[in-house]
Image (cartoon, rainbow, N blue to C red; front, side, top):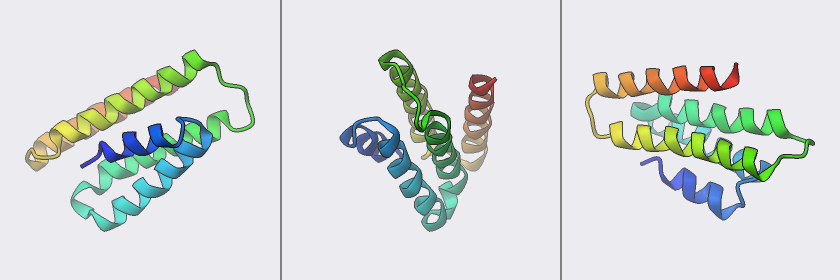
Length: 105
């Protein structure tokens, strides 16, 4: 359901252009898959924030790997919850958003 975003990110090299492509696709899926719109929106916003934060700046391989690991953790959490009920999906959504907020502080 969500892991194709990791594949896209890896195929495109995990850099700025890759995150921009992931954001575009995730925003599109938020519209076309309303049941999972919130999760796709969070992932799209996360990818877009990566682009905004790192555009035109050097990025160490360590920072790049940390960003990818954090994004992968979010995707995997949403993937695991995708077959659950609405309450389970909301709980995971809340945890992912809290985690993202903590990472940005």
